[in-house]
Image (cartoon, helix red, strand yellow):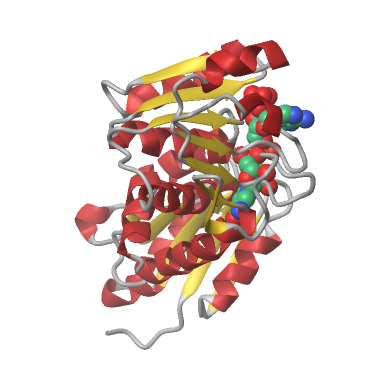
Length: 291
Ligand SMILES: NC(=O)c1ccc[n+]([C@@H]2O[C@H](COP(=O)([O-])OP(=O)(O)OC[C@H]3O[C@@H](n4cnc5c(N)ncnc54)[C@H](OP(=O)(O)O)[C@@H]3O)[C@@H](O)[C@H]2O)c1
């Protein structure tokens, strides 16, 4: 085992690298964090070379790359480019993690929470705010688990595009786009749903209480919005598997504690080898290991 200090190279697609991601890295015990903003596929190569051509052999497991930023598609493009510049056949590689806007760690924690209360392979879910970084990842995990997923957006075209992207990763996914622009859309979107996850923008109310009054099969509500008012009316910030009126509820902080554990576990995993590549499926597998 190398005794070199650990270095996390934070490649952020936003102009200013995320403070949140830096703080979590410090709290996860990372020795040094090198943070870079404004990262694109065009400017990333020398940074990757800086990682792989400095430390040698067994010491490369002590360097890792974290790709973040508010745009998950931009993060995916950077990650793909980073992979092109690793040379694993010569042992010149470092571990990688993608978590744009906390999308992978948050989605993994949310779906882990849902799976404690419902059989995800049979669940009929609705993901509101499904076009955002977090919502897309939630919908992808739920589709991968085999249940039927509705992905909601105020613009149906955006929802269709997000569903197409998910089908590319999950062949045979049972996923459909739904428009949720007005109150008249709500009954159709909610019809028959057993699980609703709200991953809308901070402070946006996506599911008022009155729209679900008639629903009988609803079992789990998860609201990831931590900024008042709640994204799902009737879900409290600190709800964590809290049952009221026969419905299990999780609020943003109820999921957030698990999200932080998953995030730190993933960072630790990066330094176990020089070949880990942590995207949504790998991060979810780590979430499943939590007690
Ligand atoms: N609990 C945690 O640990 C944790 C961690 C990270 C993030 N979060 C929270 O998770 C949520 C999702 O994060 P994100 O980054 O994916 O969110 P986001 O990109 O800001 O928003 C997600 C979606 O919300 C919809 N939206 C935007 N403004 C809206 C409005 N005024 N009314 C209704 N819908 C609106 C948009 O979808 P359409 O335009 O397609 O309708 C957007 O794609 C946020 O509330 C974030 O704060 C929680």
